[in-house]
Amino acid sequence: MSVQINHAVARPVERDWRSAIGRGLMGRCPHCGEGKLFRAFLKPVDTCEACGEAMHHQRADDLPPYIVITIVGHIVVGGLLMAEKYANWPMWLHMAIWPTLAVLLCLVLMQPVKGGVVGLQWAMRMHGFDNNGFDGKPPRPERQPAASLLRP
Image (cartoon, rainbow, N blue to C red):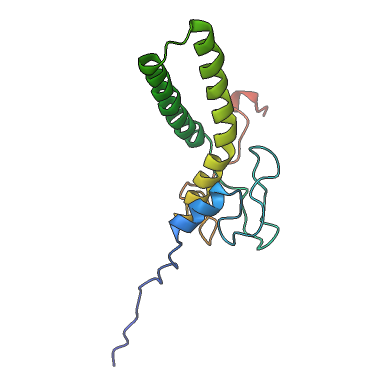
């Protein structure tokens, strides 16, 4: 008598990355779309108030500023080149408009872009957004004092 054992692991349910990014861009929970994603300007909530999804393990650290810099750079440089080609503005006007526009665009875009990155991480099950809370990294060992500090 032979027993067949199926060792296949059930695949997790697909998460729609488009809706997750869209919800993140709107500052909402990527899971339910109801709860707030941020409790301060760039500080995400620990858990969603509506569905209880944990957000404390998100790692949207450096990618949002890179995306914002790329977007703002294209807008400001494109606008500057258009103004130079088609308008004869004095230098003081350029110095008043373009840095101000760059700072304002960065401030306006930073939170939505960070929300979109958190939504993408949730949809791709990155950094602890999977069901078992394991982010692929081995657990950190507990710190031990150096051997020279231990007295016999």
